[in-house]
Length: 302
Image 1 (cartoon, rainbow, N blue to C red):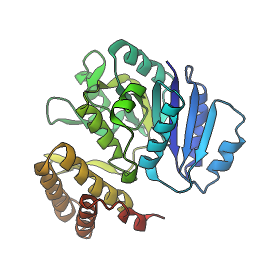
Image 2 (image 1 turned 180 degrees about the vertical axis):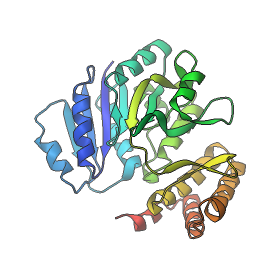
Image 3 (image 1 turned 90 degrees about the horizontal axis):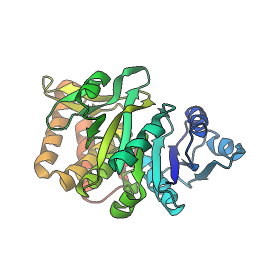
């Protein structure tokens, strides 16, 4: 099986400089494809200076966000003949045995879209991104809870894309590439839900670990602890989240879930983290998405 890694990077040269050497040490990788989203911090120059045929890169003309980067990188890997594509952002760091453990379960269990447990770099006993366990509404933050819930080392139908996940060529040929117009936030969820709708075999491999800096207030409790909300202080990220989540829920869950998401947004920014200006921003984002306008986030780019 031909395995290629895809890294999407933008203006995080220091983090890329620790990730690429880690991947160069991983046995079994045919190539490391780096998609540079028009970085301005010397990333392109550093990549060009590498004297290693294992690492190749393309610098895009403009910043297309994570969504555009993964759209480009996954398509690139498939065109190059990869059977399995290992996808990640520039700020993650896989454990040395991460790929081996993932590949073992791909072969053993026929997984088509699988990933590691994504751990908070500052505290590896906790998940970087909270997950809802299958078969209920329980959201967990602790790695111990994930390990306890695993069946034969897997959490079925759950994965955190695109943080060290493996996608098979066959799945890409069935469902296509990530939606590049999403820019950031929600493109990964849409791709996961699209794979689920296509009947893909999906799982988190609990023993495989991937470190990621814990940032933003993902999974902030609200409504007296009955649910959570993915808050971020970034207007850019919030705009894209409100727009893209509205579209994802409408397409895959229905209008009831869209309305519940809007209700949560209003509640969160009125009572949980009072920030009333976020409510009209959210509304503009949602309406733009429903109209098919994916240009509104540009005003928040810096």
